[in-house]
Image (tube, rainbow, N blue to C red; front, top):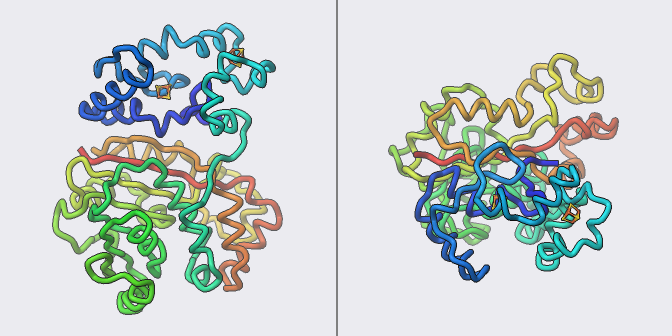
Amino acid sequence: MKELIAIYGLDCEACDARIATVTNDNALREKTAELWSELNGVPITAEMINCEGCRTNGVQTPFCNNLCPIRQCALKKSCDTCGDCPDMEHCETVGSVHGSNAEAKMRLKGEKTMKYTKSEPYCTSALMEKIMGPNPLKLEEELLLNHRIPKGAVVMDLGSGQGLTSVFLAKEYGFKVYAADLWSDPDENKKFFAEMGLDETQIVPVKADALQLPFEKEFFDAVVSTDSYNYYGRDKEYLDKCLLPFVKKGGYIYITVPGMKKDLHNNLPQELLLSWTAEQLDYIHDAEYWADIVSASTAQVVSVSEMESNEEVWADWLKQENEYALSDRKTMEAGGGKYLNFIKIVLRKI
Ligand code: SF4
Ligand code: SF4
């Protein structure tokens, strides 16, 4: 189970206490302390808001560390999480959390919790013809769950392709989007944006090489990159040299890349070689590899984790009839999907 799932099933990755801790954001600490004091009816100070997750080796709040009855019980029973405990279904202790949070229980049972309420309406056959790989809208929706980008923010959609993800960001999240892509035609994208009812105040197509971005320094409040960063971001110097200079201090960068559950480059499974060469597979790595790459930069690493989206985003792609989807079917039909996943990376510029 993911390290950033709490013993009782809450998603530590999305927890304000953890985000305030890893980004050392005192304003968020204050806000969280105020909210938690109100919810729990006890005084909680901003200094107490220090937690990196109850199943990590990092710091924890005094409550999580010493007082939480669920954690103490699980430790006594040598359970990694309550999901390992035979008594979970009838346990009143963890039931106090699960009563108001069904998703926490689902996580502990290994069930998926992702619902694609924003992206589903875009999954029409006409729009899906524009996708160039596993459904980028569903990936983006999961990537941006509990995101920290304010409405109206100026956001670069890096590697936007034919602009479908950019439309999604503008319409569903209210960002002012710069659709930055090297290989698509900005004029074609502009036409598409107009057809989707968006004007130049909402979305701007830009021909842009990710290695030499044509923008003013510190122009963007945030960057979102869906299924392209693995082509240009594997150099440890890339972030500091090529991307961070264009982001404002405190701005967030959300990245999703196709990944491997575990790097297998020394012994590539035959199923994967049915659709891709070893050279092409070198663009795909595991979460540990990506954590090492992004940790070499000056950005704060908020999280690097495996996503839930996998089978459903592949299924949407494999339904397409273009030559790339047809070729990818060979691996997936042979069961190669079991080696693959998607990885979410969240960074903050300091
Ligand atoms: S264990 Fe810490 S990070 Fe996880 S949900 Fe609880 S307070 Fe938040
Ligand atoms: S008894 Fe309850 S709180 Fe204790 S480990 Fe089992 S499910 Fe968790």
